[in-house]
Amino acid sequence: MRIVEARVIVTCPGRNFVTLKIVTEDGVSGVGDATLNGRELAVVAYLEEHVVPLLIGRDPARIEDTWQYLYKGSYWRRGPVTMTAIAAVDTALWDIKGKVAGLPVYQLLGGRSREGVTVYGHANAATAEELMPEIARFVARGYRAVRVQTGIPGLSSVYGVGHKGDSYEPANAALPEEAVWDTALYLDHVPRVFADVRAEFGPHLRLLHDVHHRLTPIEAARLGRSLEPFALTWLEDPVPAELQDGFRLIRQHTTTPLAVGEVFNTVWDCHELITSQLIDYIRTTVVHAGGITHLRRIFDLAALHHVRSGSHGATDLSPVCMAAALHLDLAIPNFGLQEYMPHPPEADEVFPHGYHFEDGYLHPSETPGLGVDIDEELAARYPYRPASLPVNRLTDGTLHSW
Ligand code: EZ4
Ligand code: CO
Image 1 (cartoon, rainbow, N blue to C red):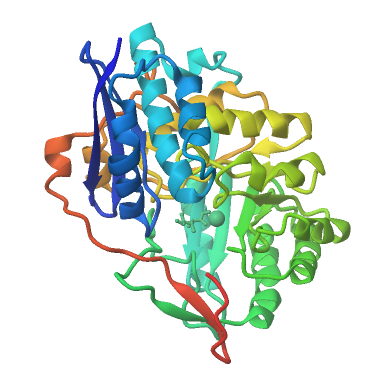
Image 2: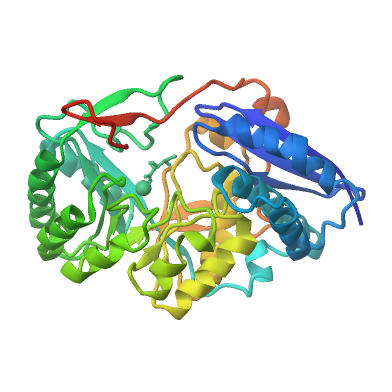
């Protein structure tokens, strides 16, 4: 069997998504997510100009060989654009393999290791008063874990805190919006919020918090220590993680569990974090870390070092990525948690899928392959719109990050 066609589909049902669809000579097709938030068209060009010509005529069954060919054969290894493109190919080939075998992809990965995929939702609120009902909404719907983010008194906007409702969209303007950040105000406020949340919801609800890379290691150590009484499941992205050694310092000072990895694209971004046991959860996911094939490799290394998975699952990862992530989540021995931000209805319509939420768990589709597709006619009705993530400046104007 040969690949005869590979199409790159760009659509914006509520937000931008890039999808690769690979078609074989027998008419079997597979899909892969290729969305890189705010840099979508760079991946489109990489795929159309450099990858699609290499796919035509190849055997779609050779998933590992194709992965190695695209990774090693380009000379320029790694990087988010390259790895997102490779992920899309890899995901589509797993979809095809499942369809040809007549099995859901998790069966090809070793079968189920659990009954369902435990997910966490996002409770965001501008103020502490609005926060409690938001968390209660998730509890009422059966969520076992909730990420808690709030506004900070004295700061007019805070990344990761959206409007009321299920989905927020940080990539909100064609050119990046700019916000002001103050670490002292943040470090003072967050422990008070978690004290209130624990007082209201008791000791058993699993709570998470995302720092979005805004602290230095010693600041993060202080935050982690001040949150210890509230027993978080994880503190996410405490520092920018180019320097893996930074986590060593945080680790010396706090027992608050650490999660990182949504911006990583290969195992080389986290091998030190994992092998030195500097983190507790690795947040790499299918679309940005080289597809199912490479993510499995990262998770296997993590399993050897007491690190569990905690894959990124924000709305800029398409339902195709979510479907693929769920198959892997169900199969691996060291699954931890899966982030889940439901997509807006128009995105769910463009990407018909069989995975579903029930009682705090997501369940992948039982249909052969990934159990997700793209409705290309509908997708064509939502043209691409440039959208960027915001940036933060300190009060004196210094560029910070998110
Ligand atoms: O900032 O998906 O944990 N989730 C997050 C997300 C990310 C966006 C970036 O594209 O931090 O909101
Ligand atoms: Co995050």
